[in-house]
Amino acid sequence: MNHQTLAAHEAVDLHEIVNFKTLCLAKSKLMQGLVFDEDLKKLMQKDVEQSIQSLKELQVIYQRAPFKASVPQSRPIPTIN
Image (cartoon, rainbow, N blue to C red; front, side):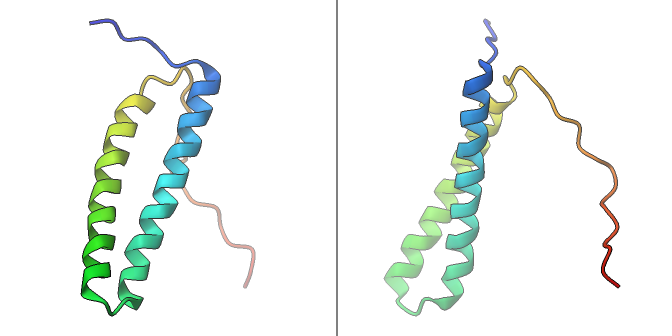
């Protein structure tokens, strides 16, 4: 099987798509609590499920990015007391 890597600009574009899709997913999930119409809630739930599936598919493609960033093991310490 031929595993081609993404060009740098393709990886950046894919990263932007993943960020946008994640934001849309979070918004749909959060807005479900504010909606009273059952048909709209069902539609929003369907959007959430489809977004999760899309993100899983995009993660597979994202593995072909030509660069990798390490994930920090610790979180920054807040400076506010």
